[in-house]
Image (cartoon, rainbow, N blue to C red; front, side):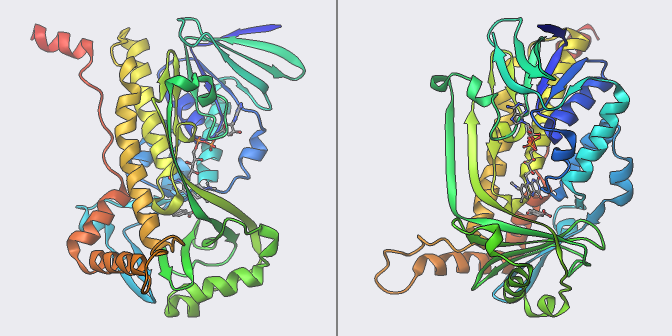
Length: 415
Ligand code: RFL
Ligand code: PHB
């Protein structure tokens, strides 16, 4: 048995775990990251594309923003197309100058892995049978297998950054957690292709045939999505079939401009809303997808992970820098406030832009559920207040700061 010791043990080497590790390292707080898969595998997962300013600022604070600031595309707005007619959501104009950044999750992960290698902080990839122990004591630990060896990692705190299917959440006794879940009757079929994007900005479409999203990774790489029934299989969708269906859903002028090409990645993601309360248990903190999932419509998943990371990083910095543990019990409460806003926005935008089979199913005459949704969308898009409502939430609500630290309060009292 190999015994290791660190201050903060981080389970999961996705963006949450890596960002937390890097931020803690910059504060001189030792940490160890474990992941069940390899770095190569992690870098193949094509996911998020849109970053809120809060996320970008956190990457700057972590000292990993050089490539993001050079290659990321600043987006001042995006379009919502509804039955062929496009309305621009002027993010910058409607939010007093705020924008989002288009920069892929793969690139962020790349930048964070590079920084971790440079930092010399240990990472164990392909760690199996990861188990958490003694979470409610002040000496928690993790056991795992690595390179055929049984290992025990002793630590002060554990950050569960291991995504929706990880072990951390399951390590909180079932009777102590409440899980809120909503599954949707469709998934998103996504295609990545080395073709120029159809527009400079994203286009979200609600069409008679269903949802579509035209997104991008750069001026030469596009990311497109359409919604498909939950029963659909990727192999059933040839590239030609995908492009033909996308074209039918995009507004006419965009469809005319669409440049197609071979897909370099194609996958289906089911849509889910999920929250686990509380997000902490003893010395374990859940971060990112381990604690909550949103449907991708509002581009909020990674951005909510970033606000969790920011909150936990500030709490742990106080613990180690100021020997101030007063905020430790507040993590879940602070994180959940922002999580629920993101959950509600993502559910709401998903409802507005997709067809739900159940809408109006019991109506005697016509489908009033669908008409209500269309009327709501038309109203919102036609009103500046409605567009602002969408814009403010899309650019991201502000991060909550921690209550005053004991050191700050003492200094204020002394003055
Ligand atoms: P991750 O990325 O899932 O990483 C978790 C890591 O934990 C490891 N792991 C384990 N390690 C050890 N032991 C175990 N037992 C383990 N179990 C799991 C895994 O191998 C993995 O490496 O979670 P994290 O770091 O919290 O990051 C969350 C984001 O990945 C996610 O929220 C976003 O990708 C969501 N998302 C989007 N978010 C945005 O903010 N903007 C977007 O534009 C956006 N677009 C998207 C998205 C997600 C999508 N999919 C595929 C669900 C578009 C799509 C299609
Ligand atoms: C993406 O580019 O992958 C993307 C963009 C916006 C979303 C979801 C996904 O809302």
